[in-house]
Image (cartoon, helix red, strand yellow):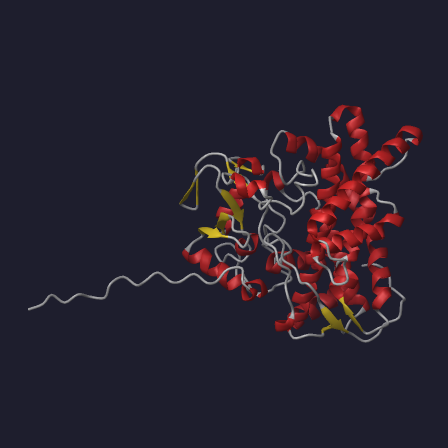
Length: 434
């Protein structure tokens, strides 16, 4: 007589592919699997660097605010990978631009953040609103009569570039150079080839020269209320801001201040076009001047398919535990904001777009001391850009099969390469701003 054996334990489910083309188009099913089966998972990234991916909302929120996780790559245990620049912004190391807010901890982070925080106060951002509306209308004027456009190239990309250049104090005659360099960094259609590193070095050289020119102007005339002039004044009044720090700060404000908003406008518009009922709901609110609905809609678009997929790099300064998983000193940790913001333990029906969602404490702009400094400006630009499109091009529609669209490569940001649209040609006669 033989003992009968019952079925053994079910084999562990296979993880879905990460970082391939299908994942880039729609990462949310894979993130749902990770949240359920491996909420803190050791993963090999496309660059070859290994890191922990944190995918549940509660774990993510705690991790973003944990002081034991440093922003400085010098804490990375893989010195060779760090040395090759695989855990930062491409080109920043060779251009001597490492000392910015995304790479430093307190007390230097506290000091530098304080210097630029005045540029993003609600009052300062509100005062900038007419300029953002002017930019949005001018850009729509450029393509409204054609009945078709690539909204990334013609609208979502240039609007935040020109806006952040104005805020930094880049002269208007130089702003097209910045647009070219930024296009090289994002591999925009029509941009010259040459790589991200070359664009970063050109920006670095220009910013150093601009800082020098503005310092001379301030010494002679004392004028200028732009952000770079403010950084120079702070440095000259004992805040100990080095030239490298000033250039790195201007660079990261430019870099972080445009790419996130490009993706907010692009992803947001694409999401609205894929959800006609919600889009019609928002269009009616815009027509009625309902700014509350517009504000809520931008927050939901940030949660549903936001511009930042993973928070920037963090490195354990000591052994710690996240979500029950032990993490060694020196290990890189990446918080997956896109996964956390679809966590059903935190958001009701998280895969449903609800532009009037009330309980919406998403992590789209981070959490803790590294919460995105430019979030108020990005929200203003997103609101203005979306409302202007809905008001001026009411029958806007996607001009390509969604499966034909391609998402930009990269680990941190999430954004479309192109967004072809069609609409009834419209006159260059903007109505009053929303």
